[in-house]
Length: 354
Image 1 (cartoon, rainbow, N blue to C red):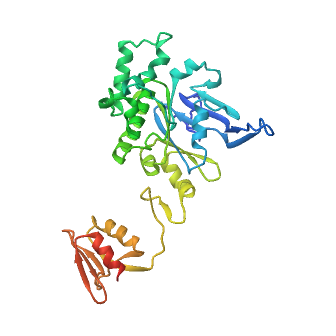
Image 2 (cartoon, rainbow, N blue to C red; image 1 turned 60 degrees about the horizontal axis):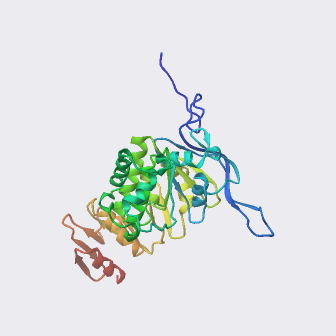
Image 3 (cartoon, one colour; image 1 turned 90 degrees about the vertical axis):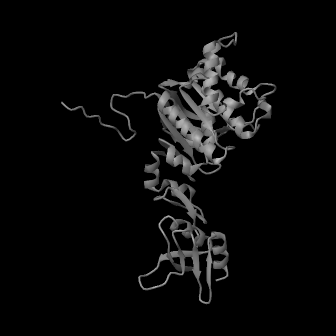
């Protein structure tokens, strides 16, 4: 007999009542007014959220600035009370979790700057072990091993003995991420963890978080503006659009439905679903016939598009106006002149005067 598992629209089997991870039901997030005239007035930023971030997956929270991503993360970790609805951690309501118990199960890294005082980076990461140490706060060899592992995991082992106050923004972000990992939680929530990192470091940290989710069975939820990277690496996406609706699914699901383009396209920017990247949206003033090897053609298209020129393939009987050879030589044939160069910069300058 063959066993067949049927998945519902949300990806849950009929026998799966409460999957491991983080889930919300009917959640509304926002703020309560503090003014004496409107005390208790609620202002919802996002409403009616039924979200699931599963164990073993990297879930990425995307959306334009001001869409409510940070408000949602702060509510999920208990720093802001929900206006309505419920948040559950592997089936348990976080509202009924004692703070110490919740700290052992959920870790958070926010964008707020912290005053590390005279602590070293290692001592700052060690704070992540306090939910496990009891009232004495004394670290065991196992605690020290967890701290060292967390530092090495984020590539910050060489920073361990540096004063935390002397770290750069990017170094501090790595150390704070290590502090969250040192808690050994079930769920890790991170708000813009790659904001101060260079491109290689952003990729490395994002891939690390995905791998940790897979290898350790963690539930990892990351808010980020690195849209293209997130769409390549994430297992699941929560996308907040301009109308405060949240779309969920795999990156490919949201690309196919057009939700990504609808959320981020602008007058001069358009999302290309085929390449999974953004390109400039500019009207072309003319088209040029191009003949180039496949490896150079995309670079030519980029350079000419900046000058308002669309690329078309040179016809069999026609001579290319712009051509490139396998050695990287570039040629522009204008009405009265021919320019040969190996520099895209020189080619673009010649095109402007064409």
